[in-house]
Image 1 (cartoon, rainbow, N blue to C red):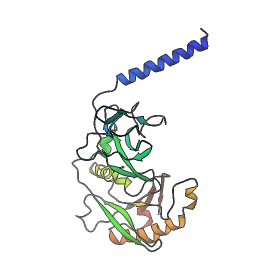
Image 2: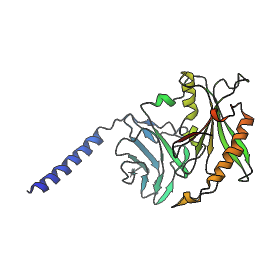
Image 3: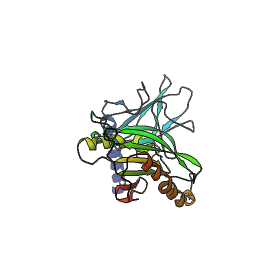
Image 4: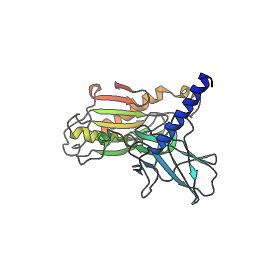
Length: 282
C-alpha cells in the first residue's frame, strides 16, 4: 500500500474511533433547559454542554434542529415507533444562550417545548447551556431592583416607542437620591427585550450591587432601529442615523430624565451598543 493511501486510511480510522468514543462518553445526566415551557421535559442539556431534543410529529418525514457544530447543517433527529423524533448534538455547545429552530419537512417552526425569544430578526426558540460562571447572572437571595416597561411618545417617528428601565435596589426608599443612567441600545437581530430576557441584565446588576462591586445606576434598554429596515443584502444602507439620534437625544433621554431620578448631565450618562460594542458619553 502506498504511504499516502495508508495515511489516509489511518486518518479515517482514527476519526471513526474518535466519533465512537465521543458518542460513548456522553454523560447521561440530561436535565430540562431552564428556558423550557412550564412542565416540558425537552429540550435538555447535560453537564458537558450537549443538547438533546424530542419532538412529537408522527406524520412527518424529516426533522432537523438548526443547533449544531461546525456549520454542518445542525442536528438531524431520528423517528421512533412512538412518533417522537429524538437527537443529540454531535458535540458540546458553547456555554450560554442559543437561538434555534426546527425544519420539519422543509418548513421552519419553533420548538413547542421551549420559550421564544426575539433574535435573528425573528422569534426563535431558546436554550441555555449552563456556563461555568453562571453564578454571575443567577437569581439569588439578594435585594432586587425593579424592571419596568415604559412607553414614550416619539413625534419624529409618529409612534409610541417602548423601552425597559431597570432601577436598582433601594431606588424606591430614598426619594432624594439621583442615579447615573446607562442607555443600552439594541437593533437589527434583537430588540429591547434581549437585555433582560436573554442577557439577565437586571440579575447581573442585582448581584454586582449586592456585593459592592459597582455603584447603583439606572439602565434604559431600547430598540435602536428607528426606521423600518428590512432584512437582506445591503439592508443597513437604508438605516438613517439622524432618526436614531433624534429619538435618543430629543425624545427618550428627556422622557427618562422627567420620569426618573437621574443625574441629568453628560458626566453621568452613557450609551452602550451590543452590535458594535460602543460605549460613550451622551
